[in-house]
Picture 1 (tube, rainbow, N blue to C red):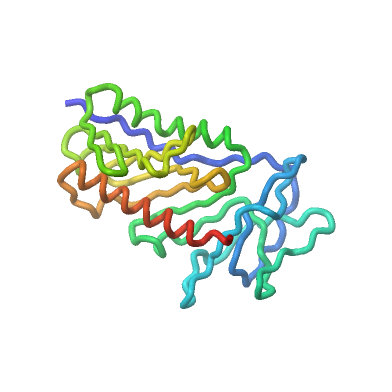
Picture 2: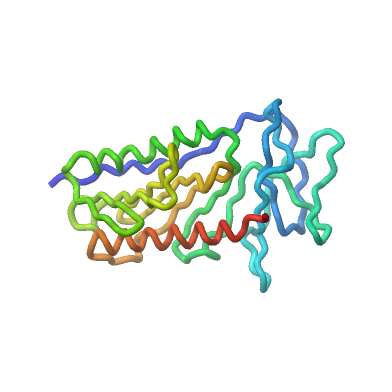
Length: 230
């Protein structure tokens, strides 16, 4: 019996910047700014702002490192309470505030959409190849399409989350029996890399597993979208 070949690619978003010394990160902050690139490929304020604090004292991040210095005479950006908003390249959030299964939840600003398109298409190629080959079981849900082979909970499965797929940036989850990975362009400015534990779910059908995968992704996306400061 042939099994779906799973390639787990953990994307690394590479940003080419003018070399600069790291700035000192503040001890007390409620928001971070993922920045925008200027014409010199320098990161500056004005990007997506993420709230890392929740009511009741819940924090999505305990601290940050490698803050980016402000350019020229630029002053620290402050929130409505007068706290600094640090400028950073990327952020690792505490995934357990979203779901107990989440092992990694990285968020970065998108500064080169073509690179993200190439990355997400590459990681989705296994899934689309399986769907088109006719050699794998294809399961259709209201908001997902999955491809698998053999016993669903003992083998690999890939699922496209249809509502999150965009032209050039498909949203495809790759799951082995122990680990699920999703590289996702949440929109044209925010890139997310999610990894979660799949060992605790004893699901006996591809549809049940696809439904579970969709729910985990929905929880992550809902949490992230509620954290974006408008």
